[in-house]
Amino acid sequence: MIRIDFSNLMQGAIGKNGLTDDDFKSIDTKKITEIIKTRKYPELEFLDLHNADTSKIKELGKYAGRFENFLLLGIGGSALGPRSILEALSPFHNFKNKPRVFIYDNVDPLTLKNMLEVIDLKKTVVNVITKSGSTAETIASFMIIWKKLQEQSLKIQEHIIVTTDPEKGNLRKIVKDYSLMSLPIPQGVGGRYSVLSAVGLLLAEAIGISSDTLLNGAKDIHDKCMNTDLWQNPAYLFSSGLYLMQKIKSKNITVMIPYADRLKPFSEWFCQLWAESLGKDGKGLTPYPSVGTTDQHSQLQLWMQGPEDKVVVFLSIEDYGVDVNIPEIFLDMEGLSYLSGHSLGELIRIEQEASEIALAKNGRPCITIKIPKIDAYYLGQLFHFFEIATAVAGFLYDINPFNQPGVEEGKNLTYAMMGKKGYEAKREEFIEYRQR
Ligand code: PA5
Image (cartoon, rainbow, N blue to C red; front, side):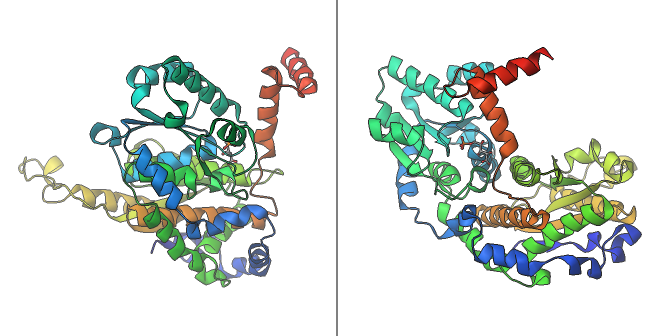
């Protein structure tokens, strides 16, 4: 099981900058538990994803796995989760495995051009993911790819798998009209909470990662995160610790630093979840993605001696699955030879701990999440743990962690300027602001 060590948030370890047990008394766990139990928000449906039937995902995953290329079109919650799964569980995937995976999660025309130069659409399965079925970026790239498939006289029904709302939206309509292959994103599951649905699991299956193992990880941590006792519930502790650190100690920034290259996209996935869920009504915590040890040489100075506004969250990997020994050479050079006889695994673990201790000694708070190893099972735990912790943080802030009104406004202004019907007033507004 992943474990949370929050001792470096407490006064015992970091002195006056830390929290006390008494500070946690203000956390109303009854209220949180009630919100979860009564499913006050329908979007809490993400809590049940680990019990879902995965047979159709597996069937389509097997189908998609036979292609040379898997092209994913999606953005935000519809892309960051799949990318985290790919990078964490199959690093350097495209150099050694089929299908090669391409994730187009922007509308940068140059990226699309470059991608299409190396992808043969005849040998490509396209997974378009959009819960709403209306996100401009995804729809635009979908339309482009659709047209290209037609131009090459390829059978659309063989090349496109749509992942979208089970009933509503433009894409669901297209699925019905053209009899396309499709997978549902359960109605109550919002984009950034959807990685453990078909959104992430189809890609997982297509590249040979067991969706069941990811879900088993989530299942096994679920009960722990539902414990009503704050001190026994890692998700409650994580969110309460960061919430109190902001409320009492003005720590407004959450740094996420996994000590593994493979978890870099995971760190970005977390940042979207944390930012988009909590940043509303003038509240929230600013997330900041990072990776160790690399960022020790670019960011750590700021965390150590810069503004005292951060809590650093370390993801510490206990077993990297492999190790590389540092050879016994240059033995007469003290500047190099001290490394001989050690290993890279030892070095990265020591550096993580050293950074943690250095920060704590300096009165800078941090949390460490210990991960036994990076595999599908523990990644499933991490996804589920952080999703629950984020929702709980939202309840502590008394905001709805599942909507994104700020994002919607940007989307609406874009629709208006791209000429979508019904957005004429927004268009006027846009033009007026542009001229100010
Ligand atoms: O978390 C969210 O809801 C968003 O980040 C969405 O995932 C993102 O805006 C894409 O939306 P959709 O899947 O509807 O295209």
